[in-house]
Length: 281
Length: 223
Image 1 (cartoon, helix red, strand yellow):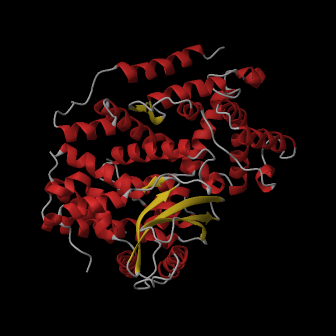
Image 2: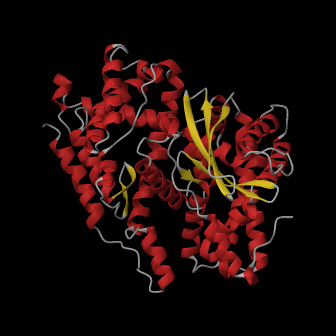
């Protein structure tokens, strides 16, 4: 395991995130306290600082690289790279499906990996999707959630972005479980054991960023408090992924995340007729 | 917070739309001008009409940004329950607000939607919109329509779930989930963070919103 210093650095920054001070002040008013608990962001001042740091890294480095990547590679090439990278994720998705007792998904995922690796030229072509084998996403954070582990406080990880205590631990274990992961058994890369997993991580990150250039630009542009927006979106997305065993997107139409309880809001409103909001003309 | 709107972005925007962005566009934007929906009209049909109408009205190249915004605003008012969404977004802070503050909030919120999302239809690139399933009993006030937006450029699909209120003879959208992320909840959480910093004073949020709306208007004028 040659990448020990790097691993140590990752673990250090993770534990620093969890132990460093900079805690938000606990409110005393009961309603505020309830809101504070729901927010579950006791490290908010520190998180905001890390978030700002990540923003600088993104704007100065990642975003320009992503724009360049998209400019110089034809769409077909990018799709091939995306498929190849997705295929490398299937083993760890399979492991997590098994740990969650999701046999049908495990069958799909192993079928996808075999099909795409053999018939799809090592994963460059996603023949499995065309053959109707749905893609699933699972990670160890979701497995922990299925096992009943609570998300814990919100944590922004340097370079990696929004996470939480559970999902941060999940991220580390997931990488250890992943035969192609940075923390995992990089023997699979043979002579390129040192660089292999990092190249994969870098290309994966650039590819992901290149597919979200406008999305993130728009969110930044429209947000009054981008930190709070990202925190909310991250949490909601994780909750949906966990609740929706079969994943969102195309395959998950049979399940649905819980919707906003407007009925309760309406009932509460009707009890306070003096402060009615303006009616739509 | 850094906000950017340079020429590179616009060139890229013109070339293709990214996944979530279109989701956001569609979520807050797709809406038909049809006045009140007939009570017999199904919520699926309501959402389908809304999507088709938004693309038909907002995506043509020939219209000016002002015209696109005007049409977008009309669609938004006709098909979204903005008072209810505003009330939800303000949450517990809304209870302390005066009626004038609530009215101003709603107006600014509407402006923000228009300024943010109308322009994204200018980069329409053949995205298609399909209703997949409606959830809920006909007698329920709030139901859900699940849809998928196909993004030919990204080679991807985005799932949008629409929460629809049926009241009397009218359907109205109250929330949209983009891949499971509720726009109303995201907005509520964002505004709660601002209100929290300002001792829960709505006036402070209104001031920030005013600044933001003015800035987006300036950016648009300069583009």
